[in-house]
Image (cartoon, rainbow, N blue to C red; front, side):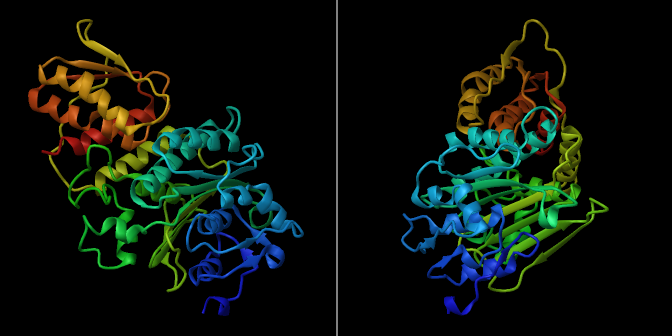
Length: 411
């Protein structure tokens, strides 16, 4: 029974099992009085399941009599439970309040706000851009795949006390109360007969619930989000938790040798009624964003199915006669990227007219956005032997463009 499992006193990412077991059992109610530590990921989990609109939500007694209760209140738990916008964004350089996200047009702005709040100024620009990239991928997964009508809950925290006193780390978490990873993948991947198998496969490149295994993606989805996060965790000696219906996976990068890692599944019962993804990386670990993205791109290339490789993007200035388009990005919207391709790129390429794309001022773009923008134009350009010129692409953008070319032109 739910109440037979005791409420753990410490909700920390280095030992997530006790809280996950308690949440999975379906507690009737609780208070913060006996909770000593609650990190951001745990409050995302609690806020996701305790939203008052949910038919099966459980009552949360939010008291400020304890230090943990005051932290939960300060980080916006009460607002996320009630469905009201948080009052203020959080504490700059320290915490980002719990926030609900349910629409595609909210994703990029919320991810940017979180990254900038955690890492203000230019000193940690590479870390901020990496966090933004990962958040866009995680939130897009929630909106596209979870089937949770309330959307997702996100929060972040810079931990430099307690267990992180000697090794400060940034922790980010996204949760939903949807169908879970296995149910999301199963329609297109019927051989995944267990939740554990689904979680394992979700960390491969080009795996998604929107296309079958062996394919590289749909028009709007490259299936690269969780793969990127997992490889980032390995390279940066971080921690990744993916808790879903039926299984929970924990990946830990080796703190001394960042490319080594330990991956394991938690015991039965330590699950989450939806999907909860939390990752933690050392505060100062991203010193070279472009180099990090290039290493992950290469890993994706080597782990993707072998196929014929064609080079058709030209990273050079186009001739003066070539129509050139400036890629302007207010928000990362894959639908708008598809519309842009259909309106401006495909008609010219089908008429065998080369095109140029100028990415000036854009430091990073997710694989999903670039996939929507150029997957079909690349295939048409190659088939008709018509050039696509790329200019002013920063290294992280170029890396993802080359990865896109690698799988889009596979025959």
